Length: 223
Image 1 (cartoon, one colour):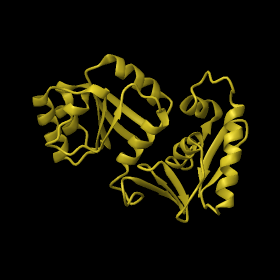
Image 2 (cartoon, helix red, strand yellow):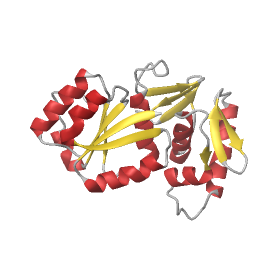
Image 3 (cartoon, one colour):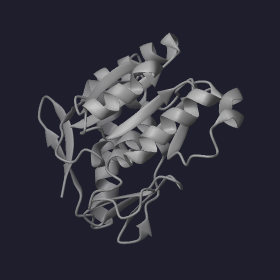
Image 4 (cartoon, one colour):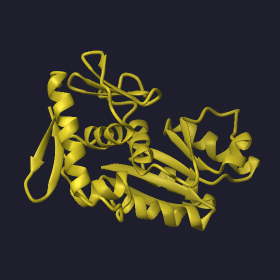
């Protein structure tokens, strides 16, 4: 379980995030207002990541980021393009994404990557390893035994979503909703076709991470 605090000012962004997080049971998300951040941080010692949905004032940012930094908690900003120049440069933040969010799976993978950055699974916060499979988030590359796989962007997204939650079963409907959007005209058959192609590429590369079919449900990845 990944414990996430989302600090918000913009209700529109929160509505979007709620729909995204509802599709991932690994996310335990609390939505709070800026004035409650210090109290929440000191009440809860098991926070894995703090998300800033929209920016506060410069003074609020400085106080809040100093508080978070003292507890060594990763920070993710979700901001609009015209707010990039307002990111607080005096405090190191871990990542940011632009709103509106066009790639749900990328957001979820970034959250999981940041939440796990201090565990043994991640020796580099920009890389994720599962067996002999490595995901390079900066380059949008996936390699097996240091050999980069030739993947479409949808194939990359599917592997990231499955690999960053090894053992978790994703239904075809959830995969379709996260990668294509639920009303995609190709339906769940599209998921099956892409999984078949990915499985073939992983097997040909001798990957120890293998996609398993859970009949009448969906797919998971294991090593």
